[in-house]
Each structure stands twice: as structure tokens, then as C-alpha cells.
Image (cartoon, rainbow, N blue to C red; front, side, top):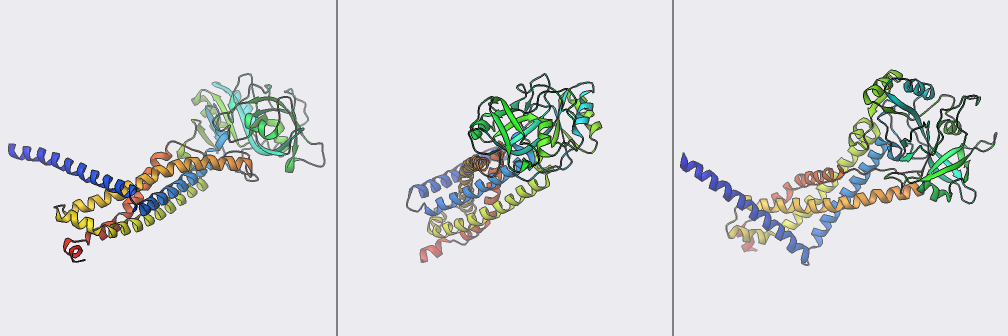
Length: 425
């Protein structure tokens, strides 16, 4: 028995050394191909994998942006109430998801509950504004009900908005003066406006039957992470509801609650028993599974990515192995068994796929930022895609799965190679 134990330990060490040697040969083989004139097919394979993974990252980022809400989800609230199975599509002009009703009255009821510090309906609407010296530009307006404490909604502080709830339809209740607006730095740059500037509503929200609504910029603030891409502004909820025609039903996209999480959750569930009540903890990739459109988009991108990546890797790897038949025959002649030669092929294929995945992640993240920049400057008032650290392992796993799907074909080509056949050639 003692002899058997010694043999197992020695065999384990030899096996590890053998694997290190095979991996080393695979790495050197790839490096030699990269620095020689035969690197064209290898570069093409890495490039194809990189582009496929980059496309996967970009589409997944768009899906996450749809599910998570983009820049408007950047707040410091403790609980959020959203319509059941809602899809936040307000970042795209003319498209919106379901909304909550009677939010002004129900938010007031929630604020009266013990443990709740504040509750505010939030209405998000793309609106065209025009400054005195600038052209009409589309901003993402976020309507809120501020209180005496500074809150963060849409990446901006409510401190510069005078506190107070929405007035009645006849303007009889007490409240702050109409027309206050807090601009993000990006919004101010887009409008070429400063503090105290008067901004007039234009475009589809302007009615010919009444004077054009206007806002006065009370402050220009630096927003959160999305500030460079999303021109966003805070206004009083009652003002935006009037502009958007949502005042009759007291509509809002969601309701934010500050205070004790348990008390806020209980108050939210009582006020909106059929809505979704969730804690707000930043961008959550799991939101993809709760949004049908976002999940379908990301799933389709995954299937297409794996299919294209695996097909291209299998084809190019098989062609490469076919060119390397003599090298494989030499390895067989010097004592490398079949499984060792196949291991070299498999490791080389997976390493090539991994290199493409790492490059694709960089291209994909850059593509998301470029897409947000272009979209916010053209068709959308804000960012349409989001980036999350989980994209890195996700892309690597997808690439490796694609490599595993592709590797049987080059292995089959390599397995048919023999010393006698190559010597005969």
C-alpha cells in the first residue's frame, strides 16, 4: 500500500508537469504564428471573435439599459415602486412603458406612514426646450416632489428646487413657484444655457391653444456617472405632468421612498398592491430577467454570438490544423501520444478564443460609450446602454463556450494525421 501511495504522488506530479509542458507548447505555437508571416489566419480568428464579443457586449448593454432605467435610475432612495412588468423605454423618443396612476395622492399617504422620511412620484419625459440664444434641444426631464432634505434623483440633487408638493389643478394649494428647473452640465451645454436662463418648451409638447410653458434654470449641477452622456434636468412634478398631459391621472413612471427600508416597503405594498416594490441598489444585471423585451434581446444576442463565434473558430482552426499536419506528424514521431497532440490543438484554440474575448470586451465597452454619445446627440435625450463589471466574466465565459463548441472539428482533423501519411507526402 505504501508503494501505491508513492506512485500516486509521483504520477500526480508528472501529470501536472506534462500539462504545464503542453500548455507551454501551445502558447509558444501561437506566439510563433503571431510573429511570423503565417499570422494572418490567427489575427483573423482573434478579430472575428473580438467583433462578435464586442457586439454581444453592446447589445447586452442596451438590454440592461432598457431594464434598469439608465440615468434616471441614479438615485439615493431606499425603495422604488414601479408598474408590474414595466419596461423603461423612456430613453427613446416617443416610446414609454406603463405608468402608475394617482401617484400624487398615494405618495402623500405614504409620506404619512411611520418610518417614511419622504416619498416622491417621478415622471420622466423627453421634452424639447429652447434657450434665448440656442436651438431647440431634447432633454430628459425628471419631475419630482422635493422636500427640505436634499435628495438625489436622476443623478442630480433636489437641493436647488424649492420644497413643496404639487398644487391642485386650480392652483389653490400652497407650493413653490412654477417653472423651476435644475440642469445637468450636459443639459446646460446642449442648450447653451446658464443659471437664471429662461427655457421655453417647444416641439410636440407645445400647444397652440395656450402660451408656451417655460422654465427658469435655478442651478446647473454636475450629475453622476451618466453626466457626460445624458442631458438630464429636474423639475417639479406638477410642472412636468402639466406639460406631458399626465396631470389628470396624476401619472408617474415610478415612486421613490426614503426612510426605513421595511417601513417603506410595507407602505409601498399597501399603497400599490399590484405594483413591483423593490430596494434600490444601483444597476442590477438580474433586472434583465424581469423585463421581457430586455431578456429576449440579450438572449438573442447570446445565441447569435455563440453561433457566429463557434462557426468561425471551428472553420479557421480546422484550416490551421490542416496546414500543420507535418508539425503534428513530427510531434508523433518524437513520442507525443495522440491525446497530447489533441490537447495542444484544443488549448491553442481556446487561447485564441480567449485573446479575442479580451479584445472584444475592450471594443464592446468603448462601443457602448460611443453609442451613448451618438444617441444622446441625435435620436435620444440620454444614455441608451449601460456597462456593468459582470460583462467581463460573462463575455469570457461566452467566448470559452464558443471555443468548446468549435474545438471538436479541429480535433477531428488532427486525429486523422499520421506520420506515415505525411512522410509519404
